[in-house]
Amino acid sequence: MRVAVRHGKIEWQRHALERMAERGILRGEVKEALLNGELIECYPGDYPLPSGLFMTNIDKRPLHVVAAYNSVTDTVYVITVYIPSLKYFEPDLKTRRTR
Image (cartoon, rainbow, N blue to C red; front, top):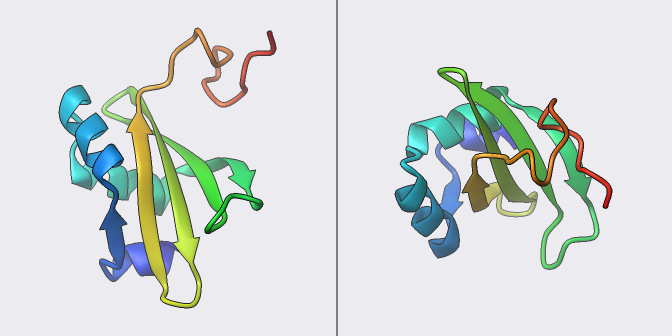
């Protein structure tokens, strides 16, 4: 997946681009999360492609990116991007809160 990102094999889903515009998140920041961020959740059963949740800090601002990977086409699909909230995550911003 990281190799695909390095080679620019990224498809930006409309939802992700809309959320990024609303939240002032740049494409370069998303690429940084995918290249150097930590994979904090895996969703192997996602359809149509397995996906994962990546986390990084950009200038001390936490960032979560959900992306899927198609190993046949070697393409990464950016699904959504957001700044994690303590409403849904523990203070480490990696662990989901239990209700």
